[in-house]
Length: 95
Image (cartoon, rainbow, N blue to C red; front, side, top):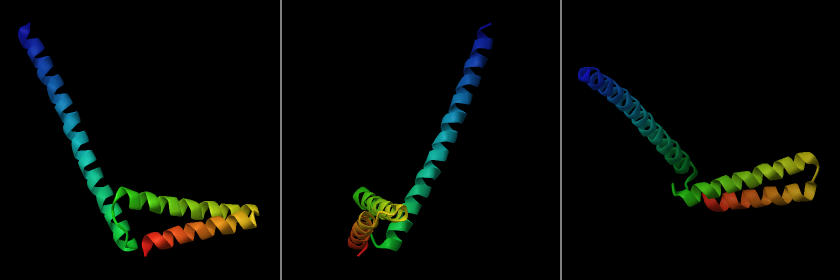
């Protein structure tokens, strides 16, 4: 009877090890893919790969998006203001 429980423990341990190694490999490759994506994006735009630079890029794109949607809704003054702010922020960040 003791050999049966040893076998169950061995099989359970092997299954857990398989799952952990598979997830570890997946997240390692996922991390490498994200690093490559952000480094390519930042390199092409001429900005740093720091978190603040990427958050600034997201903020500038968000302002630009909100400005375009405001223009499409008919809010001319607000739309032009948001587009101007977004373009100014992105221009400052990229140059």
